Length: 181
Image (cartoon, rainbow, N blue to C red; front, side, top):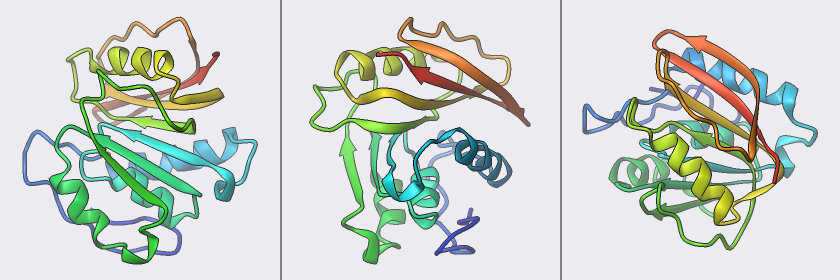
């Protein structure tokens, strides 16, 4: 697992300790960032990212490497995440971590432009987390939400979100949603 592009291109990240943590593949991550660039109206330097079910933090750390303003990473187990964040000491002011159950979030103190969500597959956690983020005011109006699911997994998209694109990468499907709140 490595950083694909940007300031830290080629930097190796630590692999997850658990077989239950499944980082987004390099190929899928690269494709998602290419699509993300085309869908954003702001520059990366103006964007705040919320990485939900962050796991190893690979997606958020890739965003840091590409010049994003700041990232907030949320996971119930932050041990792998903290080890990888420690590899980026010069970015510590841009990286924030919350140890929490993403399906039961507290009221937000900040709103985010982009959300990346890669929940454990086939457990219905993405639906709960999306609904909770909307209800607890974590999303800016028109926020872009990127949701990775298993390729055959069904999701009931909460009414506050509109599906704008869907892509498939190996065993994963990636949904691009716009928050209509």
